[in-house]
Image (tube, rainbow, N blue to C red; front, top):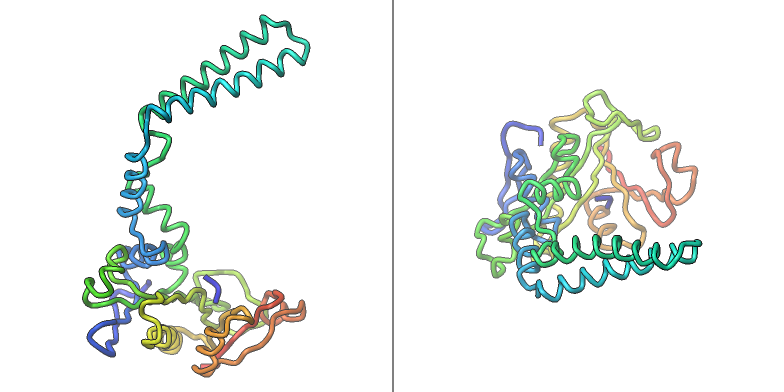
Length: 275
């Protein structure tokens, strides 16, 4: 498929290992972002950047920076000469340009700044923008699966606070939607945007439970008449999942699909379920 607005979180539990919940707080949404960021939290991202910086030979890196600056200066000096300048002017431009850039790069690299290390707010914002912008802005509604014991799976999910899968959706084509865009001729509907379950917990029914939570939300809290999503025609796993849950597949591989769905794309299909 494509890639929390209540005041309390609902949850269901099929066993003592995985819970499915609605993402309500910013902290929960950041855990989803960390899950989508290869199970890596902002803090872990910063630690990786710092470790990479610490591995650098700053002396060799300073020499490399100086060499780059002098190389740029040489090119500038040569360009000056071939553009009609005399030797003195060319050498002056080489020295000024190469020396200045080389000094800046050399000092920067000597201080270990060749590898950028983000601040915590910067790292958090990067994950928000890349992975959960719709959830943060409350344009989308999200649900997620989480393990009750963070030590399961050799602490694999520690960086995302136990999140093992997630789904988000958006109410469309009705007054209650946070998105004013009109999608084709569809009636009010909830569109599934992203569904992902980590490979370590697949075949445990997590994806089905997350889709069911979207359906319950659509029925109980919105005026949606159907659920929709878009899927690649070659994605057999997704096609089988949604077909098994009662969804109907319809190709959007030609321009005529635009009138109904507001889009068309070769090799893709819309799937829908009437509520």
